[in-house]
Image (cartoon, rainbow, N blue to C red; front, top):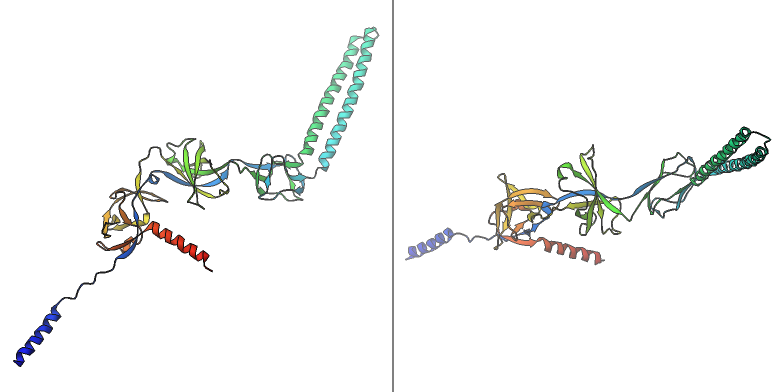
Length: 372
């Protein structure tokens, strides 16, 4: 009886040891996901350009001289006709006065020659002198008249030279460059200041020769500033350079900003999207959603049960918005867009949508700004 009891105890211990331990189900792994959508961005050409003004005027003197006064600074707003810089006009005033004196002298000589011709005509009428003698005096009268015109023209030039001692703004705008200081001696034509028109703002873009097909002046484009990518502006192609740059082999294309506002500053970086007409919407996914497995391009698809499954896709062109998927994905499917190289087939996923992450970040940032 005692042996039987021992046998039953040992049997129960042996059977208990042979039973398998219950499997531990791993917790669902959090993963950032997004819903696949169709977009037109993949078929559009997006290039980066620089914000510039349509009119950039280099202001310079027509005469040489010494600068005695500068009335503007870089950043000054100026009006058309406003004085920017003044030269020492002492010599030009003296020249103008001398030229005016020459006019007076020439006019006096003309009056004297005219009176002499009248006297000689009276003598000819009385047959006291010949006609040939009168012709000599009439020729001198014409010479005197020509000298008057010459002196007046020279006086006008000298007067202009005096006025040219003041550099006048030829348009409204802002001063962006100044290359003049009081005491400096300048030559005619040397740039003194640059005035930029702020009313007509555009973006200068270099378009590769391979992408020029179909572009023409007047086409609508979409513009986004690098500083604020949430806001878009409407633009139109204003001008296409007829010749490519010898250095870059690209064509300069100028795009006017139709609805420019004060947020747009000269020199800013802007992205210009040249949309194709009647283009087909295509699937565009974040580039981070793609990975390589056995030399195949893979996207991790999350099914309705939140299970990760790798799927081979065919990728197309990529840009700043993402990569085009030519085949392998459908719209409204859910894919992982971060940490895809750590996923395992059949793994349970706790999806965190990209939009919710953004909202949480905004909330956290707002709270941090409010907290003391």
